Image (cartoon, rainbow, N blue to C red; front, side, top):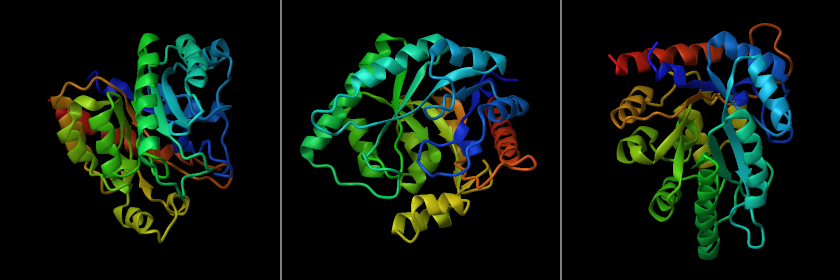
Length: 295
């Protein structure tokens, strides 16, 4: 196995585990982590608050039990609101990172509203504060040996191509290349990878049905409705150019994680294999693409 294939991680959202209230049926950590190991994944993102134990040593023990490393986790933060300082919250979080040896802080600039189906416009002062907070948080994380990355995400303050470019031009923070959210937000993830591979320090590997993504872009479907209809597909079964992305990252010497993420909404406990089949398909596709890239 090449070293890049050993950098494939999982994310609880592929099993329907999400921080959004009312998202869907939530599976237990025991089932999710056990199935991650069945797929041969090396690590997991931490997941939403409450999925893993909040006490750092207890979290580390659960992960050790399943022979999984902690990558870090998706951290939704208010970054554009005057009088709200996100640093204390992140300082506390980084203490648990130290115990579990997690090394990537995945930041998302949330709106302050529940869910991802609508968002406000940022004015100049809001942008200035948001960009300043990104650099402050990146510096704080670096002091603790953790790399902070910004996750462009549908329904957050950084969603579309212009917003991504503004971050690249006016902040020093690295990016989490989420191939699905970028495409849905109007950015070609393969082209962004070609243009700025040096800014990409973490990847969320998703595939997307472009027809459903277009309905989200036009407002015909909400983000949540599109996820429920299967907008996210196993890698290789949608419209994201996974091979080009891996090629561009490899040419730059990318040494970060490839996190398999296929956002899923469950209505009940799966009787059979459930989400495991799609994660298997994604893992096998990515291993094949990584193998080809390193021949």
